Image (cartoon, rainbow, N blue to C red; front, side):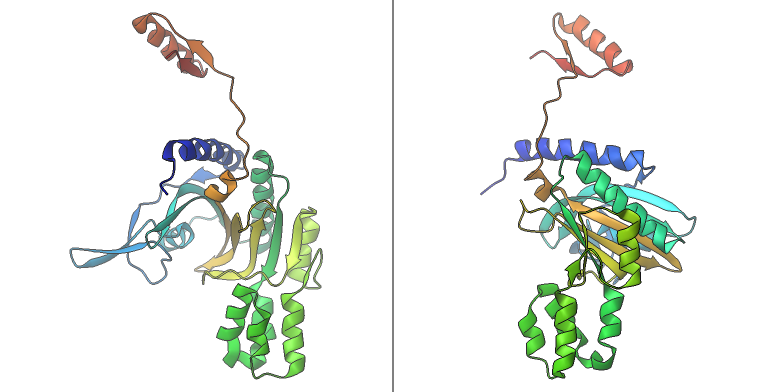
Length: 295
């Protein structure tokens, strides 16, 4: 079934305007990324194409695209709103990236901005699950030959995949306990420190949270609402050369399902003589007013 592009665009426009305003109030600048990028193994997602015997990616993952474009000059605070392709399938996203040398500050700032955005959209019934890749890497150091199977089980949250592994029972129990650990605190200093510094009841330590994208370094998180069956956003920390980054992306199409549009009545109605009405409208806009032209 074809989408109602006009109706959907109206909803996305309202959401994008609110999200953009929050990002700007936090001091972030919009980055306009090229839709087509030269092929690179570190460039994720996108529609892969060839043109004149060269390989390209159309609308790839912005985080990897920004990372590949990074030169120097910290700190960097950027945001984007664009469609992201994964093959021929696309989703409209709003994302934000903060690169700096303070690995604690960037996570605290990014998570606080995430909360600001959702509150601005009047989405209060969300929660954020925060996990750690490093905890899992350390836990499976002695069974590294099963790393691929274990991370597959984590991504799917499928305990039976761990059951089938030829590892000692006590090790399986350790993995099960980590996979099922979800609380306000988890006993791991890096996550517990974030919980203390942000101190929001909607943040949880959830060690079963694992993101599939390979550039994440340690702390990762997913954003949920009980009104949607899939994560409405996700993010985490990563490295760019010797620098540290952290960011998140929101799925605007999923957010559209739970976002309530409020009618904007702060318009000046302009009507009458064709020439005079548009001259008046131009002056009103110049003065910062919003106008609605008569049909």
